Length: 268
Ligand code: ADP
Image 1 (cartoon, helix red, strand yellow):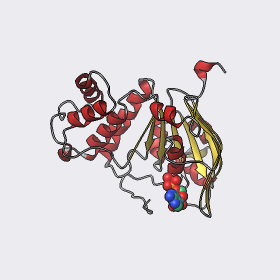
Image 2 (cartoon, helix red, strand yellow):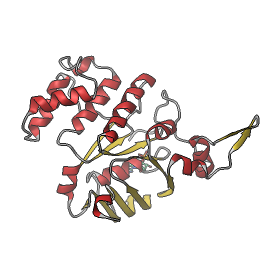
Image 3 (cartoon, protein in one colour):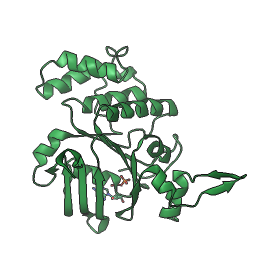
Image 4 (cartoon, helix red, strand yellow):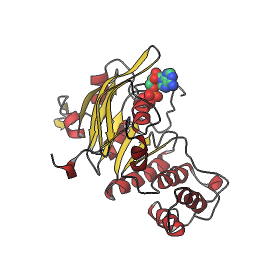
């Protein structure tokens, strides 16, 4: 493998416990640059724990993790320069307009050309028309798009989206999905955690299922579907859905939610 093909994210044997609760028992992951990778798992599987370790917000007990070649343990400052984490708890300021939020972050990062940066991101995330309205008037999908736009300031090579569409209505989810596809098309590496199977199906180049502290399976949607025999439905061979694959592999435990209206049962 040449340097240019080096993984954007590489995780080896990652372990983490919260007191007696062993959440990660040796997680291995590799995400290729410019791809969308979905980390799938039931509530409490440890998805957020993995992404918080990658974003240097949490220390692992064991194993290694690198982001664009920088070790999260020994080069945390460099990792923070190249990775951006955004999630359901949007960092946007409701009192400010969309444009003001973007300009504020650009100024905090001491970037030149603040106005141009804001205008460009507003355009990319279809927020130009709403740019000068207070965020308090935005829909859920618009807020989430603004949050993703804000996390792109400074051009991080890797963006982590922790459950980017949890709590959004179907229309807003479609808007966020289009924004995420645009990110990868622009060369950004996207690591996405989700409990929505159709989100992984729709967006991800590769999908990993985190279960009982380890990656149970990893591959493209087609590779995961090949793990189960196709069902014969009225003489037409039908590929198993990701939900069927997930349930067959994860067994008796409840599958991640598949409906937009579903809410998380546990609060963090
Ligand atoms: P997921 O994102 O897949 O829902 P999390 O990584 O948030 O999973 O949590 C994994 C497990 O660790 C859950 O059982 C959760 O309750 C527990 N957990 C998460 N954070 C903490 C913490 N700070 N202290 C104790 N337990 C935690």
